[in-house]
Length: 230
Image 1 (cartoon, rainbow, N blue to C red):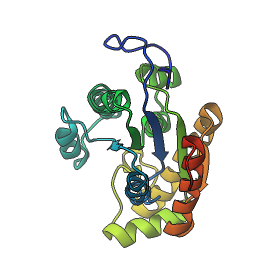
Image 2: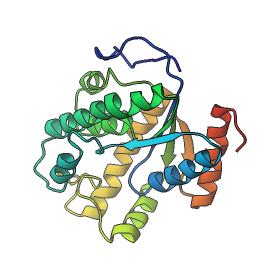
Image 3: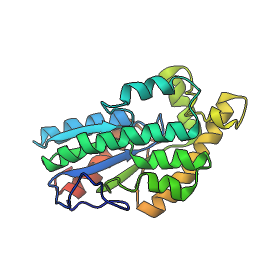
Image 4: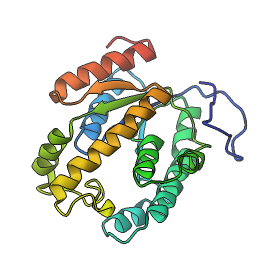
């Protein structure tokens, strides 16, 4: 792939072609991203393809500290944004780009779109939010796992028996009730993703369905982009 940046190239990276491919799965907690990526990795590797995965909060530089910080409730929106931006760019430079240079298929569990949507929901300046990730690499394709807010509530309760403070948007004071706040916040996030989808041409996947049906849909789409049999 020819390197394409959203706005400007990273100073550490010269113009070059990358033999690998970058695919993104976006979607809220409870959309099944991790399950779908794990199954896609197995499917691709059975076909002899080298795969690397990454995702938000996994950088060696700040991943552990970011996880600890988000377990609390004291981060300001700006601090949280800059924390995640540091995590993202560290992975871009030390995980994503090296894997693409080596010809790997990179599957990333969320990308800058979730981060931008979070910032916009918290009333960040749209130009600032986009400029913060202006040196991000443009992926080949973004698959957006779209799920209704009510379904997300059910899945999160089944998985964790509770709701996450940040994913419920409790810092925004949308409601004193976490359940109501979660539904309102996810609807706000979905509205932002609808706009981002138009802007960046996401391929939308109905993730309200069973795991197997979603996986079959993703394999078909991914196979088309890679030129392999589903």
